[in-house]
Length: 170
Image (tube, rainbow, N blue to C red; front, side, top):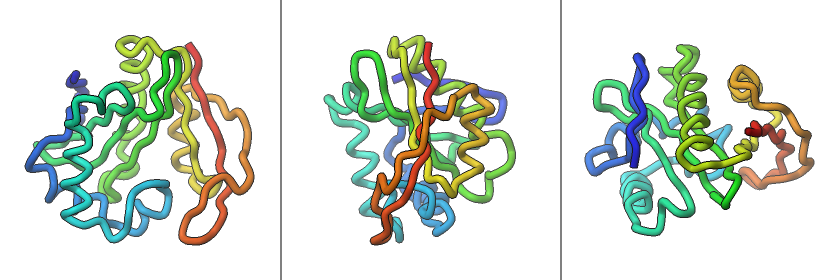
């Protein structure tokens, strides 16, 4: 898998040894609150399973995940799932202490470019909880367009949540 470089961080595959930094950065109710599939509390077992799932030979065909690495530490993640011939869903998270530094905006730009150039996608889309305006701003900053709101789209903590769908088309 590719390694994508920025001046602030690198996007690289998850690797053995990322467990501690993953747990430290993802095990936060504020991070959990705005994600669909990250458990809370996030355990060592969760980290080991996630890293292992990204190393499966078939994983790259259905999903590709990058660790956002600053100084050798996985401080966040960004990746594609539901990869089809021409489209994929992009999702991301970032440890709270790294919020508001422009890291996720740049990571989204790099990952989206990777999706269009290397994966030859024509459509990259993101599903964002309606309450998560920070994520919506990051998508808009990267020229993703709001396509609509899907009512009661996902279940989170026993409640049905409305989501916005954003997409970027090549």
